[in-house]
Length: 68
Image 1: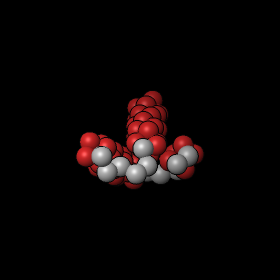
Image 2 (image 1 turned 90 degrees about the vertical axis):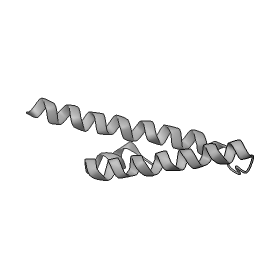
Image 3 (image 1 turned 135 degrees about the horizontal axis):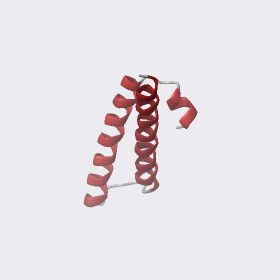
Image 4 (image 1 turned 180 degrees about the vertical axis):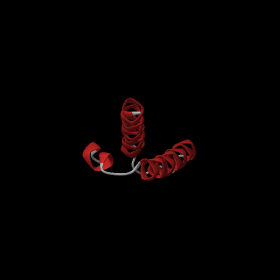
């Protein structure tokens, strides 16, 4: 997931993406606790994607506040 792809999306789409990523992170943590996780690198990737989406949401909120 690129930041440029995320910047093209609306805030509503980004919020939905954030919800989906947080659900995936929860499921990965559950799998890791039970020892059933296959791709351990995916946990790190999802955490970074969550941070990326939150950063872009904050950027959009700041730019909207500056315009108002």
